[in-house]
Image (cartoon, rainbow, N blue to C red; front, top):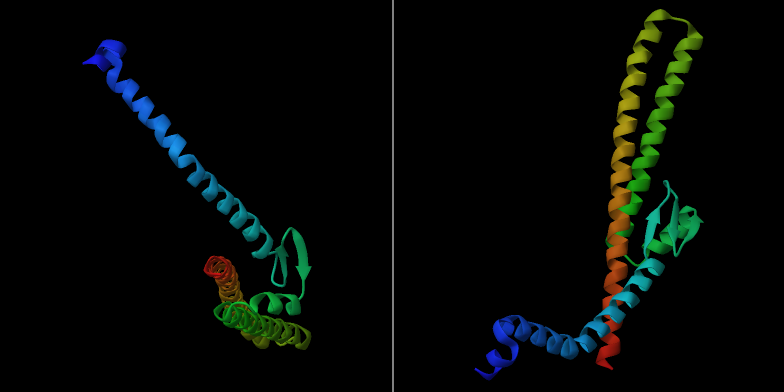
Length: 168
């Protein structure tokens, strides 16, 4: 009754505002701590995760790295990522060999000049090109999945590191 007299009909609104102010005052230190943890995780994520630029170049911590040896070093933290990366390299190599074999056969048929041979190698070249394209597409998908697994495992290492620090 006294509250209704002081605040009038806006009693509920004022009570809600007061409750929200008290909640903000009580919860603010918790949210600030979570914000600090999120900022730390964000910096760590930017520093430790990779993304690909082509088949054998990647970016980590805003620096561009080249070469298979650097990629193998990055994938060493993730066994599943390493397996997919190696499978991707194998599929890409097989696709490239098939593509070159089809092109070599077509060029040989053209140099030979036999019309029947040209027609045959036209279809062979078409088939090897399609097979090569499918293998390369599969290799790109595997590489993307390998990078995803590697980055996931890098984040799990962050969680393990955080748990070790809290356990001490």
